[in-house]
Amino acid sequence: GNSVTQMEGPVTLSEEAFLTINCTYTATGYPSLFWYVQYPGEGLQLLLKATKADDKGSNKGFEATYRKETTSFHLEKGSVQVSDSAVYFCALTPWNSGNTPLVFGKGTRLSVIA
Amino acid sequence: GAVVSQHPSWVICKSGTSVKIECRSLDFQATTMFWYRQFPKQSLMLMATSNEGSKATYEQGVEKDKFLINHASLTLSTLTVTSAHPEDSSFYICSARDHREEKLFFGSGTQLSVL
Image 1 (cartoon, rainbow over the protein chains, first blue to last red):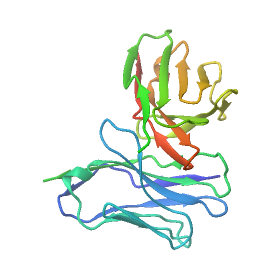
Image 2 (cartoon, helix red, strand yellow):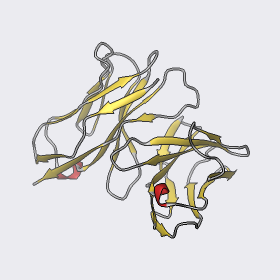
Image 3 (cartoon, rainbow over the protein chains, first blue to last red):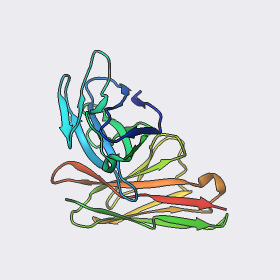
Image 4 (cartoon, helix red, strand yellow):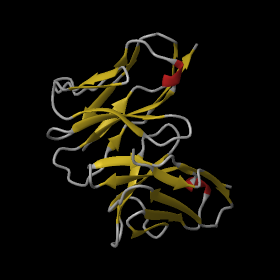
């Protein structure tokens, strides 16, 4: 079946540190991959996505590359800010899924301290 | 951007009572809405898919008589947890599909605590 595994948190970093949140997936075919972010008191928001192998999604300084050979979609940011503190969810939509919604990981809480 | 409003954000209730959670798409029509549940330290798990004007489709293991879903209009879906028990305590979140852009937008979630 389809599943997403992401590193467990919480992750605590100092401002301007480098961030990596690992995400690996299991899926048939060629899924689309996503990172969602949930800020305190808000709904999940799409952060970035990639729809095919070797695609790189990027937004707000965050990047993730779709690696089919390692079935991974790790999230990275070169210099985190306090405002990046949130819960990050890796997710996938199975290929040719029609109305099938996303399969999520457990979420990783990031806390950035000044 | 599109907004999905979910209400209430948190609720505490006694065992045996019913709780209704509302999910509204504020500036778009949503023919399809999804309901998820997240237990502590677990993944967001899809409970059911709600299509406007028809019966919801429930995932395996989700009791349809316990989790009643109504999607009577293109902007509103409700989830009612009937005869709630402490094991129903969880974080419930809805999402709505904007058919114009084929994007999903999420509500901010409801934390349910059953005493």
